[in-house]
Amino acid sequence: MDMDRYVYSLISIFKKSGKDELSISDAINIVSFRLNWCPPTEAKKFINVILNNSSSIYEKNEDIIKLKKDYENIEIPSTFHHFDDKEIEKIIESAGPPDTNIKEDIFNTISSSIATKINFTTSGIVGMIDKISVEKKIYREVVELYFAYLYNIDVSLISSLNEHINNIYFKI
Image 1 (cartoon, one colour):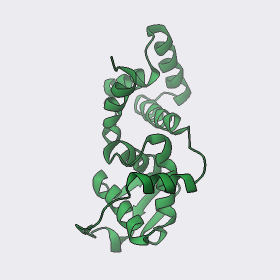
Image 2 (cartoon, rainbow, N blue to C red):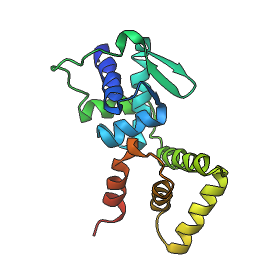
Image 3 (cartoon, rainbow, N blue to C red):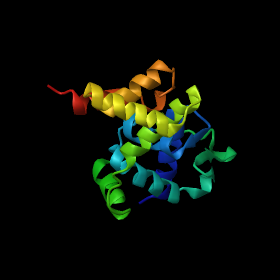
């Protein structure tokens, strides 16, 4: 596959976010929910392949990636087409078995954001969310999103998560 497609894919993710720096989980959310390139369960592997094939254009500090100065203002050519579904499938297959923990990663990211915002432990927040979920008989993701809303937590990078949850859990 053409190396430029990986580079332009990574630049596309940054442009869609509107940010200079992204955590890996933010990049996964953008690929899954905002760009709709692949499901969340496969996005982590897809992001890793993109990062491995475009390592010369970004800097990574722990979980944060940032485009190098030379690449921040690059315009994506109008002839660029992101990978189609079959290509993404091949890329993900080459990366190994599906990652089933992406749902947990999203849950943990939001839960720790809530805990930080209200000065509480993450395990305490998760316990509260799980308890309410069981008592009210609703999915914990819904409770978590309610808490995020209640405490003004910015979940804009996963704004399509509400639609995703609605499509999965509330179809009639």
